[in-house]
Image 1 (cartoon, helix red, strand yellow):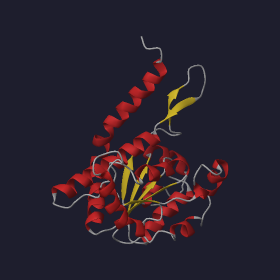
Image 2 (tube, rainbow, N blue to C red; image 1 turned 180 degrees about the vertical axis):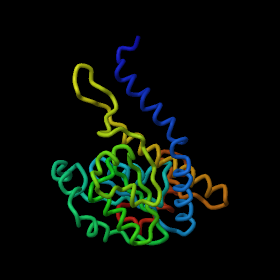
Image 3 (cartoon, rainbow, N blue to C red; image 1 turned 135 degrees about the horizontal axis):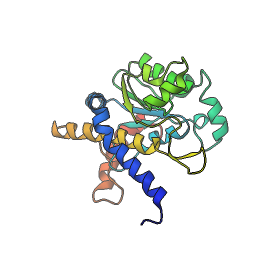
Length: 245
């Protein structure tokens, strides 16, 4: 018998949830891959934004070995956790903070905006999606449909605004495992599932591009043969439009 039964149960639950993603999101994954493929062919960019812990999805895709170089993280310490998590929780619920953040990123009709929010109701993420649509970008949401329906209380949800919705299938509150003898739950899954969904879309789009005779802009790990030359060419192409390179 395992000495870590609760850890094993959490990993088994996470594995099962990951395994269901394709059947539960098949049409949305296909539509999202279509959008990323179109953007790549149009020499556009895929912007990624989230607040709180969801901002890590933007960093997950940024300058990532095996990832797409056309991804651009939208990063502002105001809405992140490393310079004041408590304040960031307040800011992400305030109206009007997104427009000045997005001024740094010249988004347009050839681009995709991925907005990540597990609860799907915070003001900043909803306004981000609305702003992306106003600029003509295709907006993809990564969210929990169940959580956002419960949390909405009449408010507009991210899922209501986005063109394409990828549902992480997470429970309200994110944590999946009951702590015996208490009302507490532990074991969030939104980051792991969100990263899997996002990378599944990128994999599909990259293979389609390469199969169609277009070199997919994929970064190589710095320790792989030829990485220096491949990555230098991609950086030269995207650095003028990606302020974080």
